[in-house]
Amino acid sequence: MKLRVFYNFLSFIAVVFLLSSCSSIFMPNVPATPMFSDKGEGYVAAHINTKGNFSANAGVAITDHLAIIANGSSVNKGLNSNNHFKQHLAEGALGYYTKMGKSKLQILEIYGGYGIGNSRDIDQRATVVGFQAVEAKVMDFNKVFVQVNYSSTKKKKINLFGEKRTLNYGTAIRISRIGMTDFSINGEKKDKEENYFIEPIFFTRLQLIKGLQVQYTTGFNVGFIKNEYLKAGNSVFTLGISYNFGKK
Image (cartoon, rainbow, N blue to C red):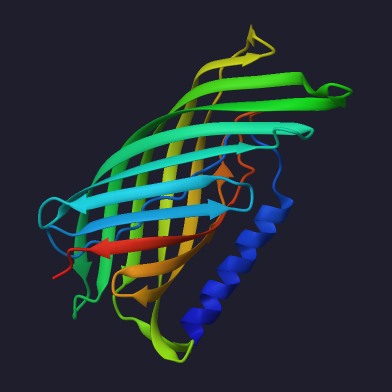
């Protein structure tokens, strides 16, 4: 019960950040949280948020303690509105995982990775022939990140749809350096910005069948540099599915 109250509190904090967030030219993706325990395990997941940002994850445990993960995200929202935002992001990482605790019921993962992407943030106005751009901000960027995942394999059971289903929780903390490699406004080159973000992420998984889970993810990001364009302001607040396979 205390653990459930704790995660509900964290979810509430994340929603507050979501509602109070300001506009940013960067939208974070959902990090991969496979929680591997043995060599040969695999993981795939897909998530979507209320802003139409679709994230996909995949990973495999290649040895008893080494794993690789890949993430991608895409959003294209507001084409016929006052603001059209479009972003594509791809990243990969290599990491270490291990079981912890006296009974080996906790899992810790540590990843380091690199990514690239591009964003378009276009302010528009309605005309008799449709929406036309007023100001178009376009950036290409790269990303270096370190991510720590933690979860317990000790699962809770809840009654749902006449059956007892497994429920478990976890968290991820990602620290990222994101830097513009190219930036322009209305086609004119502008000074490039960089920022450092810390992103605490919390997830809850409800198992539907063996290996297949519904996942609710919530979190927020904090930027350490006061920029005009590349700043914190978009929270992680998604619903998705994840599938773990190859478990012994």
